[in-house]
Amino acid sequence: MLTVNEYFDGKVKSIALQTATLPATVGVMQAGDYEFGTSQKEVMTVVSGTMTVLLPDASDWQTFNQGESFVIEANQRFKLQLSGDTAYFCTYE
Image 1 (tube, rainbow, N blue to C red):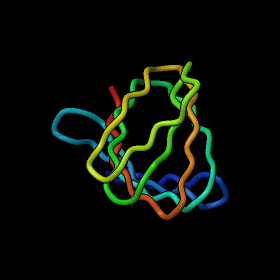
Image 2 (image 1 turned 60 degrees about the vertical axis):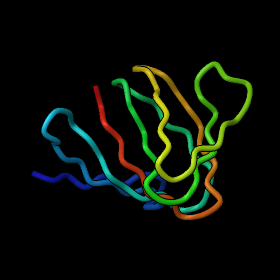
Image 3 (image 1 turned 90 degrees about the horizontal axis):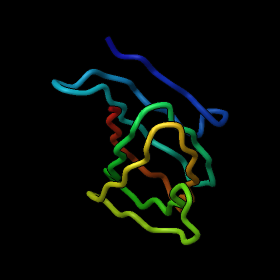
Image 4 (image 1 turned 90 degrees about the vertical axis):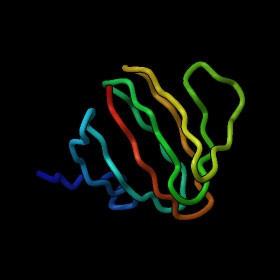
């Protein structure tokens, strides 16, 4: 069964699904600045667009392009800056 999630007044939308091995979401974020928290380990992959990310405990922002991934451990917060609409795929462990 698919579940639709919406955050930041509709600027971030995702659909939750169960892959063969892990729960996941696929979604789109509009241009903007966002901060998220995790409850599980997440592996985020950029499908389209670019994400500039401030990872937990980091002082420098990192840019991830289409096809690139980053990992956020459970119970962490991270920030995103998006200059344009960006699609992502995220798995949860």
